[in-house]
Each structure stands twice: as C-alpha cells, then as structure tokens.
Image (cartoon, rainbow, N blue to C red):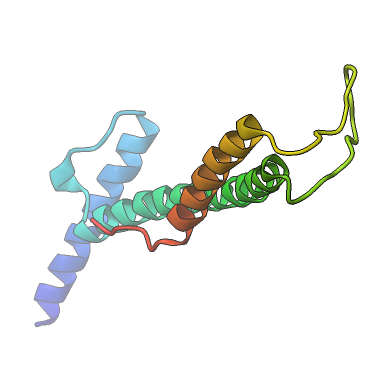
Length: 129
C-alpha cells in the first residue's frame, strides 16, 4: 500500500515537473501530461471570468434600459400633452411644445419599449449551458 502511494506521488510530481518545464520553455504542455485537477480548475476559471463579463454586460444593459425607459416615458407623456417641461439646455432656438406632438409620442413609445426590453433582459436569469 505504501509503495503504491509513493508511486502515485512520484507520478504526480513528474507531471507537475513537466508542466513547469513546459511553462519555462513557453510551449504548451501535452494534454495528457496535465493532471485532471489542473484542467478542471482551468476550465472553471475561464467559465467564471466569462460569467463575470456576462454579468457586467447585463448590469450595463439594465442601467441603460432603465434610463431609456424613463426618458422614453417622459417623451411619450410630453408628446401626448400630459406633461409640459420647459427646455433646460438649448443649442438652437428652443421653444416649448404647445399641445400634443405625434412625433415625440411615437419616439417616446419606441424608446420606452426598448428600455423596458433592456430592463427585462437584465433581470432574467442567464441560461446555463
């Protein structure tokens, strides 16, 4: 029993030594020489970093979707004539919209729908492969 354990230990040390020598030579080691634990760890860490990137993307889409939803809702209400806000920043001759504006109502509706899609997309649970 002790001899079997020592042979396994020597085999693992030899495998790790191959990995170190391959890393120093800047050439990738053979897949057979890499222990299964190292391959499993490597696959998990690359999947974990991929999941972090996906999570950050979902957060960004959710934040931008919330902003688009709020802005689209404001434009929709302004276009429908339910809300009147004086212009804050004008780069040209700006005037308040008097009455309803079909153009702003349609643009606001499209923007609100896209923003709602972004929020719903970010709140859904990600699909696991």
